[in-house]
Length: 462
Image (cartoon, rainbow, N blue to C red; front, side, top):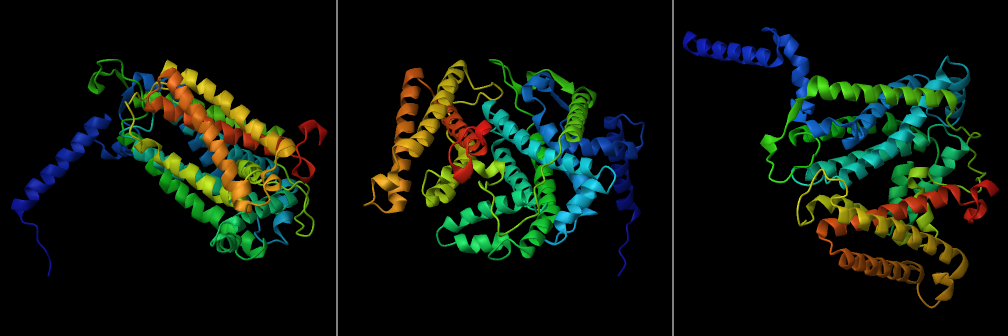
């Protein structure tokens, strides 16, 4: 049965369509051509039409979110080029990397750009997370976007992790072996998780093919979807957070058009980032060790640098705590940061207040001293497992040192809060700084100060 549109229905319908097109054309400034309106319409899905003047200043956000987007685009482009030549099989992968570097014009440069973009992206995203936190960009109405950003960060880490194995050299093979080997310490599910990620009991052909598929198909799709959702949520919140002066209303704030004021600045930042990566990649080659040899482990064998802090923690704390309990608690705490009941919302102000800045300095100093003392004390003075043999290892080298360290940190933070009469915002910020600096110290220690047999050593004495 065919449906019919009667004149009484068609007239008002087409009239409304015409009015809608004209309104869209006028908003875009296009003299009635709806096709010209489309690009700006798509743009304004991810950018508000006008933003506060403070948000345009480079030093307000340092362009970190835009830098991350540019690096992701570089990774997608260079990754597609590398995929045309790379062969994801153990007997061919390493040779295909050599062919890319030595036989294909600009192949070494393309691989360098891909490698360094991936590593720089992790650093930029980490700094972006700090910028959002220290300017209060997780308060209402941006709480859920903090969670989305954390998910995006995890996807980027997973992409770096899966791509780490693909060169199939000694560095890659043993770094992934060490990282996935940590999962064996997870109670009950450890062996299963390890087998799922490795594609079997050992790192082999199935692992390489699995990592390649996830790295080139699954994770890029996830990063695209979550990234676009993240940008859209920023737009729905009215752009990045900026501070309100006392008694100022949101509607009273002076605004500037996104195009061209903001977009031209973002274009300049993008060009600078691309130029830096291209020049850096032309000067410094991505590392490539000997072909992977499962029977010959390097000494020391280290995890990828972005997970190496966990490897350092594993040297001091029982595996159940270092691989499962502590990471899960910290990750859960980060996800819950926006949903804590804060005393007030002072979004846009760096470090919340002058009080918060002073407390942050104390937290940095305490984290460095606490972590260094724990590392040196465990290496040279006191080993919980040896000193307390009557206790089960999970208690003697796990629960007990964690309780002692947590108690000492809690006493310090409570004293700091009382000393500065801090509110909940300043207290949470101090705790966040304390934990972040601790992880950075662990990462630096394992990356540069661990030598043969993972013993402490000076970097220049290795």
